[in-house]
Length: 147
Length: 49
Image (cartoon, each protein chain N blue to C red):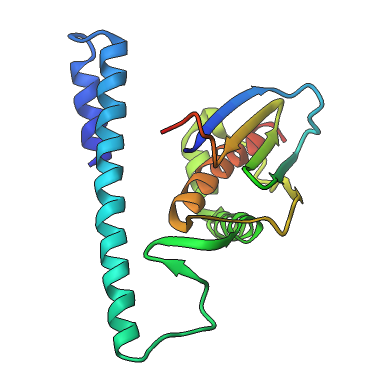
């Protein structure tokens, strides 16, 4: 859906002011994400209730209410994103070759995670990991270009 | 709830990406530095819906 939305905005751009397009895009995405969160949360809560009723309550599993993890470790999410990015290095390497502006040496930049490494907070795990993954992917592409 | 900001980083180390987690009782922030840019991800920004 996102590519279709981008195409529609691109086609509409000669006819609408940039701020109106921006406002439409923001409202559209916010609305879409909100509905998805509500549905996923409802499904996860229902699933949890069902598993409880079946006696499948796994006390060792990470604590969550629906899709909200109540004790999410930030460092674990960052490490997971770094691992996924590194495991997909071949894919990104190929993409860089296709885009002359993004050609780099292929050398992985060093990624240091520091600060409050044991920080935990309640959040939607998938959303946090999506945000961090996209940020690190951008940063990694730029780093690969300049190394 | 979540906010993203970016500014220049005059102290960057080339070829090194740093992800710094900063947390207190009220907020959790992640700062990513890379190639002269500092990206601030505020995960508990009360100013954002």
